[in-house]
Length: 125
Image 1: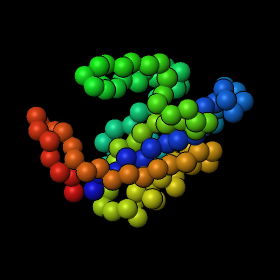
Image 2 (image 1 turned 90 degrees about the horizontal axis):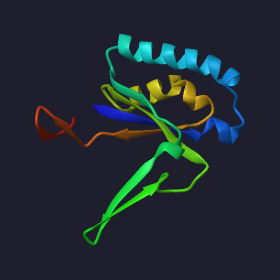
Image 3 (image 1 turned 90 degrees about the vertical axis):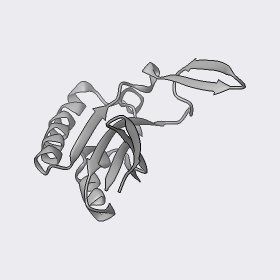
Image 4 (image 1 turned 180 degrees about the horizontal axis):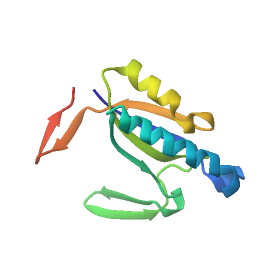
């Protein structure tokens, strides 16, 4: 079963976190990614640029609307995504618990419903 582990937290500059503060987390995320990969469950991982780099696109009434920044203005932002393939939700929870981001943010675990692969959309699971 495919799950996305969505890392949601305050951005470092908003939380007063320095580069020095982040150094141990960079090491921890490197180890976490390698552990996911070694277990054969990692499909993809992305750590995102800050929300200030976001562009939001909407099509309303046939009119394209493009805005700078995220859709919702909140303290916490989507910071990264780990796409994993594990047997069940319990396994996804176990991997989320090991994520360094769980120490300062929230991990939302969301099962995949449909995946686009090999030129077609397919149900997952």
